[in-house]
Length: 340
Image 1 (spheres, one colour):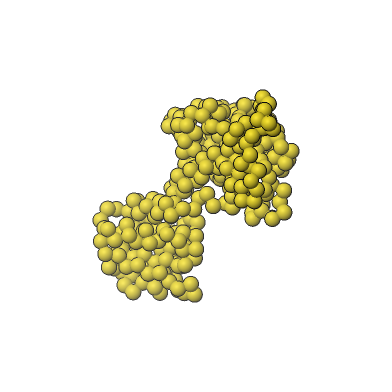
Image 2 (tube, rainbow, N blue to C red):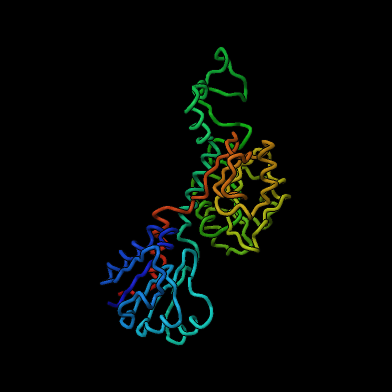
C-alpha cells in the first residue's frame, strides 16, 4: 500500500466533506488506505499506520505527528500534514527530518479554496442589500402590508413609493448595473467579486497597493492609487482583504465617515479590517446600509441594535462553507502531488 490518508474527527468538524473527496481523488489514481479515527482516538501517526515503511504518499489530517513516528516512514516521498487551519507540523526537529529525508511537503499556497464560495456569497449580500430581499421575506410572514403598493387613492408623489416598489430610496438600491462599486483588495475573493459586479455593468474601482497590474484588468476594474479617493464616491463599498496585523483597522473612521450618505457597505471577509465603531454609528444613524456576514462581535448578541434593522442584512459568518469549498480544499492539495 503506497498511499495513506489518516483523518481525525477534529478535521471533519471543520471540513466535513474534504477528506472523503481527497480519498476519491486518490482512488482514481490507484489503491489507497483510508483510516478515519474515532473521536476518542488520540494515537499519533506512527501508532496508526500498519506498514509505515511502505507508504510513499501521505495525507495526515489533524492527526498528531512526532519525530519518532515519522522516522518509521522510511519510504515516504510526498506528504501533506494539515490541521483544521494550516499545517499541523511546526518548525523544529520534525521539519529538519523532513528536509534530510528529502520528503516533499505540500501546503495550500493561498486560501483560494473558498474564494468562489465567499465571492458569490458577497454578491448575494450585495443584491439583498440593494433590494431588501431578507427584510421583505420576513415582513410578509406576519403582515399583508408589504403587498399594498397602492398610494392613497391611487395618487402618488414624485420620489415616493410606487406600484410594486419595495426598495428603500434613502440608500443605494436597484440594480448593480451603473453603480459605483469600490473594493479594497484584488485577491482570491475580491477579484472574483469585482469580476461579477463588472459583468453586471457596475463601474468598479479597486485599491490594493500590493497587487500587480494584471489583477485589476482580469477583474474588469480600474486601479485606484489612494484609499482616501476610493471611498469618496462609493455607492457600494466592499473591503475584502484578510485580517492580518498589517490590515487590522486599515479602513479607518475617517474613511468610513467619507463614504457618501446612503452607501451600501458589504462585509464578507473580516470585520476587523474596518473601524466597526464608525460603521455602527453611521448605520444606526441611517446614513449607511449594511450587508454583512462578518462582525466585530460574534455571535452577535440577540439584543444587538444592528439586528433586524431596515437597513441591515445579516448572516452568521458562513460565507466560506460549502461542499464546493470543501472539495476545492482537497483538490488544491491533491493537484500538487506527482501524477500516478
